[in-house]
Amino acid sequence: MKYISFAIPCFNSQDYMSRAIDSILTGKDEVEILIVNDGSRDQTSEIAHEYMENYPDIVRVIDKENGGHGDAVNAGLGAAQGKYFKVVDSDDWVDEEALKRILTLIRNLEEDGEQIDMLVSNFVYEKAGASHKKCVHYRNALPQDEIFRWDDIGHFRLDQYILMHSVIYRTDLLKLIQMKLPKHTFYVDNIYVYYPLPHVRKIYYLDVDFYRYFIGRDDQSVNEKNMIARADQQIYVTKTMIDMYEMGEISSKKLRLYMVNYLAIMMTVSSIILIRSKTEENIEKKRELWRYLKKRDFKMYLKIRYGILGQTMNIPGKSGRKISSLVYSVARRIIGFN
Image (cartoon, rainbow, N blue to C red; front, top):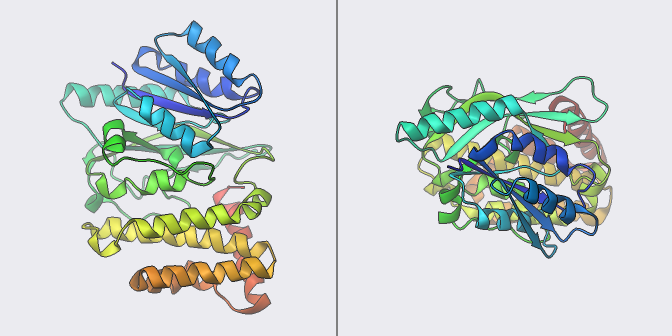
């Protein structure tokens, strides 16, 4: 049985994709690896097909026209046959011992006739040149060694939110809610994590350092210069998430708080990128984004705007922008991104 389908979106990934694939191959016949070649112009497809020839019972290749990261995830999900679904970017990899423990857990759940909607594990920032590798865990926020629900969760710190790196969803859940990410758009991993949350009933947290998130390439989407250049896409993703749900209709109070705080982080990231661009056009885009939130959901606007993050992002004048940028710089060092 294929317990996990791993989708690996690849675009011109010939120089580093093998590390991702090799790390997952250690799961053997219990995993399915879907290498999605998203219109690459290098040897990505040839490398992928070589893996499929060598591991025909594990690896499948999807060659498609370029549609961006989200569209590659869509293609992987559409082809997935495993019980659970996980996205691994082509420049990242997974810890082999942690993978064994995750597969053992899923196997045991199956034997007990149990299934979960979401499995959460830790991830590690593999930042190029950094001697200290920051690990994001959820020990203080999530129960361990048991199936739990949203009402059982604790408090998440700002550097502790569930990202694409830390989540494995049940495949049929994603297909049932018709998960479909926008084409040719960066930062859609936030939609991927956020959209399924109200549909998740049963959760399990396994305290293993599973996902290794590499940071250091100049062309990465989280590079600050690239984020400023793609600020409109960050705004689009943030607005899309704002529009997804009426917060008053989220039944679990703890989930509702988590989702509002997640949106506060998205508003903060969008705002600070626009501030740091230092153009009046982008400063106006920042103001418009906050007006959009206010018009869409006034109660949510008040919670976010007058929370700590919202206040920091809206200090008036040039001095306020400097303070906002300083806060961002400190957060970068604490959290470890970019």
